[in-house]
Each structure stands twice: as C-alpha cells, then as structure tokens.
Length: 117
Image (cartoon, rainbow, N blue to C red; front, side):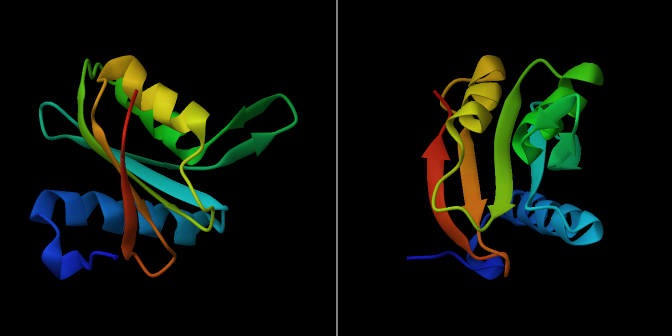
C-alpha cells in the first residue's frame, strides 16, 4: 500500500517532494533527497558521465558528506525501478545503518520503505 504525502510525517513528505523535484528538474531517471541528523536536506539526481556514474541516492549522500554530515535520519528516492538499488542503500548505510529509505513513484506516492544495511 502506498503512502500519500498527507499521510507521511511532514519531514519525510518534504524529502520525497525534494527528490521528486530534483528528478523533474533534470529529467534524470532518479531523484533523491536525504535529511541529516541536524535536519539539513541535500538533493541530487542520477549522475551519468563517461568518467563518473552515481545513483541519485549516492549523489545525495555524497553531497551530505561533503557538507559535513556524519549521520542521516532518512532518505527518499523517486524512481521507476521496482526496488532501491543495493549500492544506494549501502551508501545510506555507510552513514547510518537502519536509516529508513523511502521509495516513491513519479507521482510522489511512497511505495516502499527499506532500511539501509
């Protein structure tokens, strides 16, 4: 069962909205957002360059880390995929094992919540 923005915690709804906007702005296959333990948010979309490939969630985690984040409260990824990529989950888990990762469809409906390893 999917969750609507109205049924999510307001802070989780915010990162889903930010992830959706990131995807829409760039036209990338995925958009992601993470919230660090200080409440700051970071967004990114898929990076596909000849010399660098990152999932949207990996790029959002990298943005958080490069800004000094040491832990994550939650993450969201908007994707057409049937599951969050294992490498994306691992990137979140590198900072905070067990952090919730919301997977939403293109409309922003959360279709799954996974836990980072």
